[in-house]
Image (tube, rainbow, N blue to C red; front, side):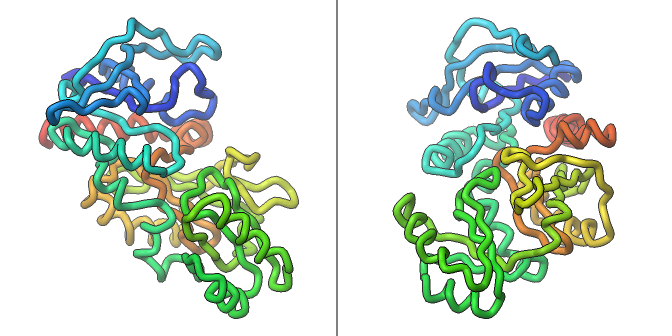
Length: 315
């Protein structure tokens, strides 16, 4: 049965269809006979317990510069849709968190992907701490003394903002680097959030693997290789994707976390693995599906919609 699908996303006119996972999801939904409606978070409204948004009906096509045919603006009640895809980009700030409260009011009668309550409860760099045996040594804190002690034990470290995205603000610090304290001061000035300090993994030079999971099951992976002299492999900062296979360790990691993802209603998840270690569990707006399809033919977006259809049918 055709589904009415709303997509909460960044403005559709500005997306890069050559790498955008949300666009691939929309293509998959449309190919399976579902209708599409797009809106942005700044149009959300709640009135008397009902949730509304202002947006447009849309059809998509893989034509650069002419990828979306949109209808007239209209205000809709989101509970009238069968599915809402929550696909706006981070940062995971109060606007993002507020949007999860809006969507929680309609879920699960309207299926929200991913479950908004669990998105709120599972920030990518904190959710992963449920699995310390899969992580590299990791410290999350405001405390500079704790950071100094951690660094003394582990040597070279990587510093990350807790709620950063796309590799932004990630820096490596050698054991004798005198600049770490100054950088911590800058982090404190920019925001009140803690920082993540993680033991540096030399294997990052060989790449940072993105594994996509649908309803807790691994469907495929790509490797993202940093530019020469860099440690950040995110495609947003110049990392180059390449094909790769799932290793036995990758499958072990996915089998460990998969049941929890499924139980939480986190239907589309991207995890990051460096060497043998799990570094992030991305639940907000995971990417990588376009490269995966290009390299392997595996269409994670189509697999997602097959699962959505099964859930809506009560299978």
